[in-house]
Amino acid sequence: MLELELIESFVLASLLCSSDVIAAISIVKYEEQPKLFSIIFGEGIVNDAVALILFQTVSGLKEKIDNNQPISPVKLPFAILLQFVILGLGSLGIGLLSGLIASYLFRRMRFLTVSAIKEVLLTFCFGYLAYAFGEMAGMSGIICLLTTGVVFAHYGWFNLSPQGKHLSSATF
Image 1 (tube, rainbow, N blue to C red):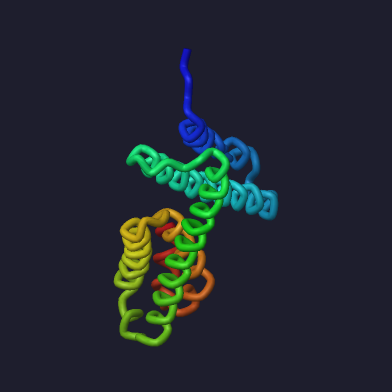
Image 2: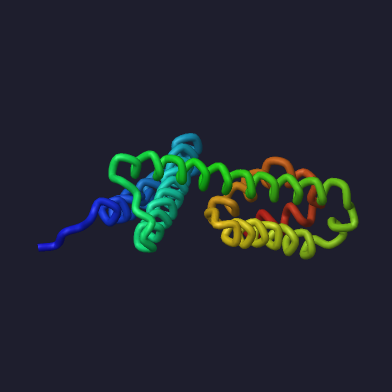
């Protein structure tokens, strides 16, 4: 019989809590019901983000326990909650900062918008930098990248040249 410790059960539960919304999105067509499609897609992204952060949190605590830093079962939920909040807010902060810096640079330094290919390349570079910095800081790189993309789409899109907008929308 397989017996799991409490922390191993949490790791398994964090892996299983992410649900896949591809089946629901494949049924709903964006052209027919754009609001419903956006709601389902957004729920899927938020669900995946929470699952990623929860898995990183629990696996990080499992490593601490494996390195002889025991946490009592009473304090374990609070430790998970605290680490979850730190990882979530840290990842969002790094992504927000990266997206705002990218948007500001494209707004103030117009020489960056001379070539559409250069604009798209720099946009990818800022996303990768956010991902890499988030991973190096012990945060969730994927959440950093997602936040950078959302912030840049909201603030930086208007600072791209018309050719850069066309090339970016054709690329994505």
